[in-house]
View 1 (tube, helix red, strand yellow):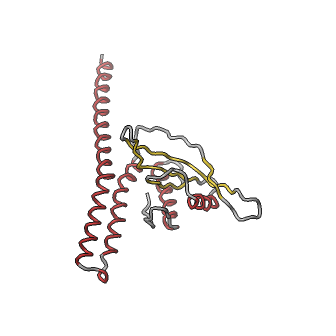
View 2: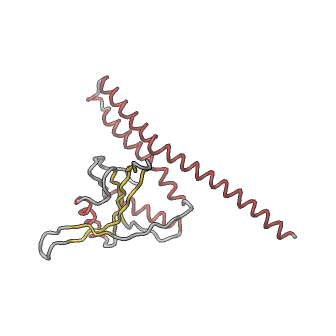
View 3: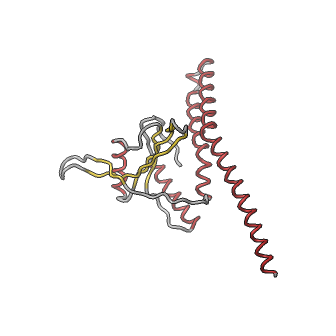
Amino acid sequence: MLRRSDKCKDRVEISPEQLTHAASEAERLAMETGRPLRVLGWYHSHPHITVWPSHVDVQTQAMYQMMDEGFVGLIFSCFHDDKTTNQGHVTVTCFQSTNQSPEGEPPMYERLEIPFHIVKNDTLSEPCLQAMIQLPRILHEEEEDAYNQAQLPESSDLITDIHNSAVFTKSVCHQLEVLTGPLMQCLYSRLEKNHNKLESLQREKEKLLQVLSI
């Protein structure tokens, strides 16, 4: 998970340094897990809007495909509530870019939907768990950096300081409400599930040992 270099609502940017770091991280995870791993795509979210990539997303994807023709993009549309059930749902799409212009003319890219499958897994690997834990920290660092930037001495006065502190506190509380709290609840539920499974396996082990001793 990467820090955003631009927090505007209508764009997502990944710096070359972040791409290099992602490739290095994939190599590190390959050595740690003993499995062949590489960066195969990029992802971002579309909060409160449709899942379809914008023209900027399509152009960005085309740029990545110049470096790797197998590179794909994932977009998650989130924070949509079903009014009948009052539950949220997430939509995801996988896409590439294809040039629809005739040969010799400037490129005109369009979305090419790529089929993909989500494979259910009952276990949570250590790298995935660490990535989940990193997200609240990354978002907090972004807010903290923005707050520190707004608190520069040359532009500071009492009213501005109070306003900036209130905005920072509100942002952190919002993160706790929508992310950190639910994440902690999810991890506690998983821990309880693991404890119950462990107890069940221990009981099964004792029964098998009794059978073997007969």
